[in-house]
Amino acid sequence: MNVLVVNAGSSSLKYQFFDTTTGSVVAKGNCERIGLDGKITHKQLQSGKTYTAEIPMPNHAVATRIVVDALTNPEYGCVKSMDEIEAVGHRVVHGGPYFFESVLVTPEVIEKLELCRDLAPLHTGPHLMGIAGCTEVMPNVPQVLVFDTAFHQTMPAEAYYYPIPYEMYEKYKIRRYGAHGTSHRYVAGEMIKLLGKPAEETKIITCHLGNGSSISAVKGGKVIDTSMGLTPLDGVIMGTRCGAIDPAIVTFIMEKEGFTPAQMSDFMNKKCGFLGVSGISSDCRDIENAIAEGNERAALALNILNYQIKKFIGSYTAAMGGLDAIVFTAGIGENTSLVRAGALEGLDFLGIEIDRELNNSVRGKLTKLSTDNSKVQVWLIPTNEELVIASDTEAIVKALGK
Ligand code: ADP
Picture 1 (cartoon, rainbow, N blue to C red):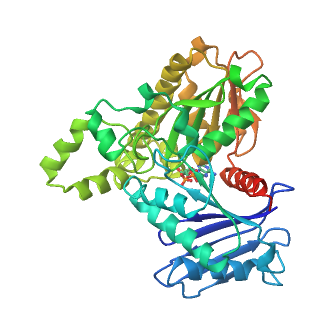
Picture 2: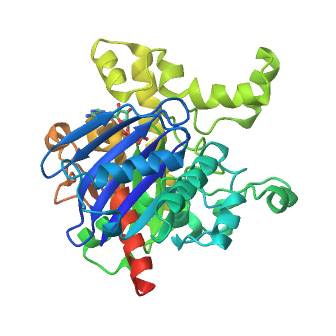
């Protein structure tokens, strides 16, 4: 099936065009600066032909039309006409307490998604605009929503409730939802296949470490806990996000610095993390380079991440009553050997042993990092969220009998 996978942001629309029979991407691209001026970057992967243009994109519907034009272009496109686009799959950041799995877009689904606006104000509006854009341009093409929160919906109540008055949950739906669920689901699924035992018997910790990072405990193929919370600010230190901190620090800094709630939110999301601690950069590559030059604050930033991952591994092993495998994925997980080695340092008591040389040399490809003696397998598994979105979309649309 030909599936267009769409990731709509406030001013961008990223896309990948999948042929699900081969599981491969045939074209991909990005529309940027929607609502400002507009620029498309498109690539047909088989021929390597690219197309970039600055075209006015006042809204997501116009951007979608431009994407469809690129996909159907005789020179750099990949299909003859719009009729060959059989389905659209949207990445959706937050499904609140309403969505446990991927769903076909219907008017009722749109109503429920509207209820998620409060939970992810920066993302939900753009997603709705992306969906509306596709509906306008391709009214007869079925659309499916795939939620970053859905895989985490299996958490037990003690893992997702916060110890605040219960009416806060009832009134505002404040609870742990988690994020990066599509990535955790993909790598956990691959890890289960690699372990070669029934999914119900597996205990896996998945570490999605990128600009935003989250760690999940996946027992029997289902998430029982995850490090991100109501929002993607919780959990470990990130590029510019602080992760979990003493909640009293929030009111303390607001009082001392005279910050409004919006300013405090901006501070915690954009000024903290690697950037705040190192004073250098939010990017792990810059942090690594600074460490190589002897910068102590850069080393501190990375050590905080490594120590926090180690603590999550310990607590999630306890929560699952054991551990079969640890997976590292996403930008940092796939590329930064210092983090993988640092996080696992001293965990030999859990029976974890990695091949240090292999760990130091490998980047971005499926690799078993643990030795054959290791009781716990450690793997680098490159994530592929778009493939999950394309497969879910295909399955749901096929079930419609189309
Ligand atoms: P996002 O959360 O935005 O999807 P990514 O998964 O792309 O982020 O991860 C971005 C992080 O991964 C950055 O800190 C970056 O430094 C790091 N990273 C990406 N590629 C590499 C690389 N080749 N070498 C080292 N670090 C990398």
